[in-house]
Amino acid sequence: MEHLDRSAILRLMLPQDRYGDEEIAEIAERCCELWYRVGTVLVERGQPVDDWLVVVDGELEVSDGTRQWAAGPGAIVHPSQGGAEPARAAIRLVATRPTTVLQISTDRPERP
Image (cartoon, rainbow, N blue to C red):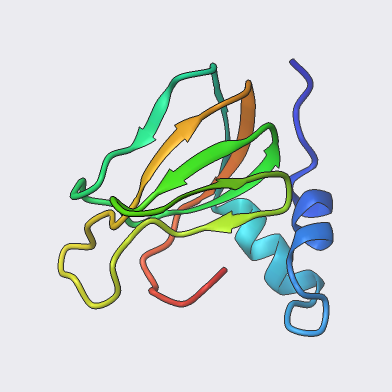
């Protein structure tokens, strides 16, 4: 499988008025590419989480226990509940198609 150009993907998906080339390069350094098969559970509600996910290709089903929706290419997903220590997932994520995400590792709570 072809290696993704993380910086190019992030430039397309992050607000350009908020992130310059240096910030995008720093975020790209904290990314890893992950590929999921249909039906793979990425995150369960209540599970410890800290990373952001950027959907590059495919689709994730997102559910919070009462509602369900889809996150497709370009979606930025942070599964944790605000203020929880350690952060716990407030949503469940399942790949509904073969899906590629960039996982952005962070130790800061702000949005990537």
